[in-house]
Image 1 (cartoon, helix red, strand yellow):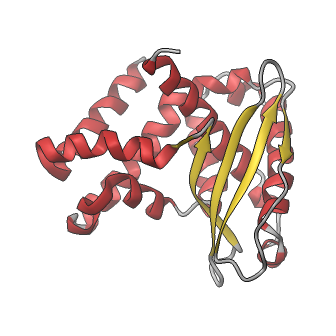
Image 2: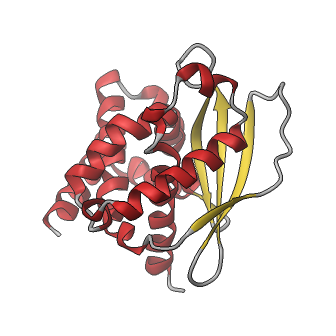
Image 3: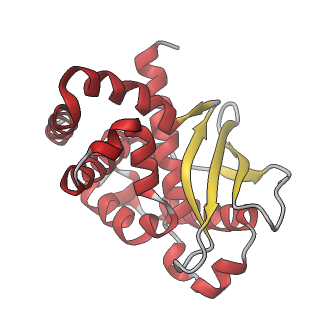
Length: 217
C-alpha cells in the first residue's frame, strides 16, 4: 500500500473510530457513564453509533456540515481534544498563546472531519468486537483494543482513554491506534516539520490552507 493511500485508509478508520465512540453519547446519563467500565463504554457506543451511521444516508454520503455538527454535539464530550491536539503539536504547544492553541484545535478538528468525511459511505455491515480488557479499577489511563469486522480483513482499532472525574463523563479518549499506527503520533511527525520550518503560525496557516482546499474538493 503506498504512503498516501495508507494515510487515507488510516485516517478514514480513525475518524470512523471517533464517530463510533462519540455519536451516541447524548443518549446516556453522566452518572451512568462515570460508573461504566471503559471497555463496556466503547462496546456499547460503538454498536449504537454504527447503527446510527448505517441508518443516516446524509452522514454516509459525507455531509460535512452534518458530520461537523455531530462532532461538536456528540463526540467532543467523549474526547480530550485539547490533550490530543497538544500531543500532536508537541513541545511547541507550551509556547503557543491561548489564541494559537484555540486555532490549532479548530483547524485540527476540521482537518480530521473534512479529510475523511467521504469514508463514511463505506460503513455497511460492520460489527465491533472488543478484545479482553486488562485494566483495573484503579487505573487512570487504559487501553481498549477492538476490531471492526465486515467485508475484507478485520481492522484493528484501539483507544487510549483517561479517567476524568467530575467532568460529566468517566472516560475520555485521547489517542487512536488504527491498524498499528497511533493517530496522534502520525500527525506529530507531520506537524513538527512545519513548526521547525515556519513556527506555530506557519502550522496554523498550513492547516487552514489544507482545510480550505478540502472544502473546495
